[in-house]
Image (cartoon, rainbow, N blue to C red; front, side):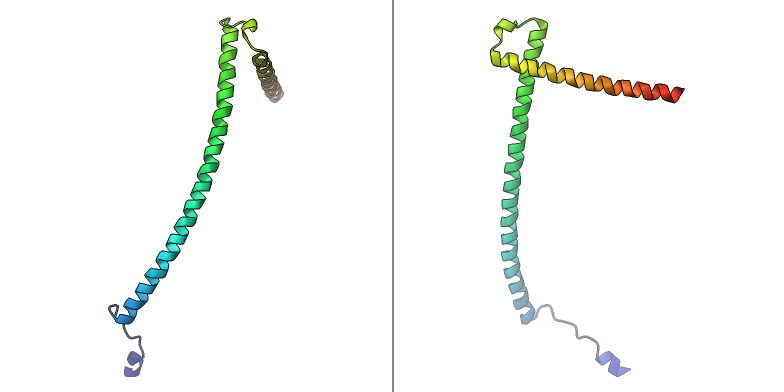
Length: 124
């Protein structure tokens, strides 16, 4: 039995010179890798941020145009603004907006009609 115990692993001294040198080089190379990875991640974040900023700016532009048109539509509908006060470009945009709203209403009406027909069939 003594032979088996003698073959067991020898405990490693953590404070030995070889371990200190090994830790030094690990830390040295590890820090270089971390620096490279952090630089790459910073570049990726910058690219993502620019894409995100461009996307949000495009959304803001769309929202600005839509809100401007809706405000113009409200003013026209309430009578605060007359057709003579509007520019040709504004009139064309309002016509497009009205056509878009009408088509959306027609689609929603058709969907509601189909639901009612299905409900009516289920009752019979």
